[in-house]
Structures are given as structure tokens and as C-alpha cells.
Image 1 (cartoon, rainbow over the protein chains, first blue to last red):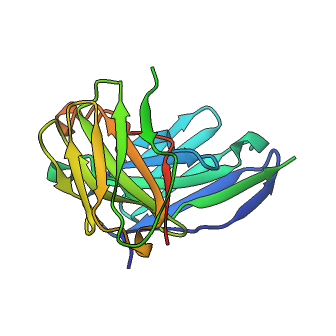
Image 2 (image 1 turned 135 degrees about the vertical axis):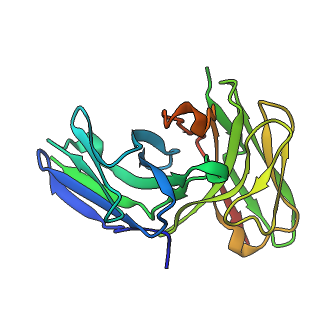
Length: 113
Length: 119
């Protein structure tokens, strides 16, 4: 079993829809949770970074972490065609494992006009 | 600032050939990383360097070696390429303030990638 599981999709939604992306994990040592966005043939770029359980909002994006259920989510409101990309969740533990990211498989999202 | 740069962008090798992937960053970051990305697998850490002069294995180090040449540069070497090493390789860097920063964000910045095919 992979440490981080992410539904690869693909996911296709109309412009303006609310998008929900999810990851589950099995390693209870994970303390830091991230969402990266990757456009086609580009490197990933950080979208959201959270440390504790709860919600974090940044514009149209909301990251949610539930450590008790080992479940994280990314919500995109009022989705735009420019949001079309692959979304990767990533996590890392503390201590000597700090800095070593473990990624989910990535979800391919297409937002059509 | 160029950020993280990688060379080459594309490479085709024959089985058994060797090559070195180059990575450089101009952000004065302490830590650097090499990942590979395969379809349906996400990114997997090959090697990382927490600071100049140190390197350590990640999740999939077999078949690779690394050199942290100086603070700016971190190279990945394939001594004898195999078809299983066909992948997209990403280099990343971060300031690595570490857990003592109290959980402050420690973003990894990624390069554009190198697409490697081993025949």
C-alpha cells in the first residue's frame, strides 16, 4: 500500500464549478501537508502549505487537513480554465525526515469553458 | 533570478550508457533534491542534499549517484542506464529552515525537468 493515495481522475468540470481534490495517507508521522499544481510539461509549483488540522484559505483555494482521519482536501471555488493542470498532494514528517516529500499520484483536472 | 535550472531538457540514451543531469539554483538555498516522475506514480525522491557537503538517499536511489558540487549545483548521475530509468527528472531546492522554524513554510522550488528515454 502506498503511503499517500490520490485519485488520479481525470476530472473534468465546467467553468465556475467547485472542485474537490482529496488524498489519504497512512503514515501518522506526516505533519506538513502541501498541494502543488503542475501545468503540462512544467515543474510543480506550491499552491498551499498547511501544518495543523483545520482549514486554510487563499483566494479561491481552501486546503483542509483532518489528521485524525488521515485525510486532506483541496477545494477550488469558481474554477477557471486556467486551473486546468495536475494537482499533487505532498506530505512530510518532522525530525530527520524533514524536507523529504512524499507525493500522491496526482489528479488531472480540466476546466472547460 | 532564473530559479532552478536543469540541463539537458531532453535526452535519449541506449541501455548501458552513462550520463549526468545537471541542476543549479540561484536562490542561495541550502537544500537540493532530485525526483523522478512516472505516469501514475507522482514524484518520488531519489536523493537529497540537506546542505552543502551532505547527501542522503531518498525512496528510489538504486542506479543513481549524486554530487553536491557546491551550494548552487547538485548533479545526478546514471552510471549504466536501464529502460526502467526512462522518466522525467526534476530537481528542486529549498531554504530548509527545518522544524525549528516552528512549522513555517519551507517551500521546494522545482526546475522545468529533464525528459530521459532509455532504449
